[in-house]
Length: 121
Image (cartoon, rainbow, N blue to C red; front, side, top):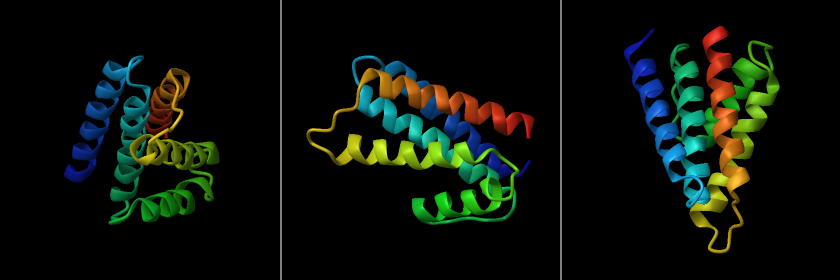
């Protein structure tokens, strides 16, 4: 495993730990941190292939191209990443965003499944 991959996975672990602490009172911030946990995992997978991107859209697109479309990972993980990104945008920038505790729990649960899929692939 490359050093950058290890660093990104540690960041993912820290992000999800913070997300769990924020629930249930701060569901919007929890959903945002859970997104970042998934994002860091996607970045780590791409880094192992020497692929680095400066924008979220680049990571999303490359993850879909290199892992979902090729069948290396179930395409649902790409959909989950994109959905979590939309929730993160709503949580961070939407003044009246309706991010529920269930949204936060769902994001955290999906992160855990995402991480498990990484471990077994």
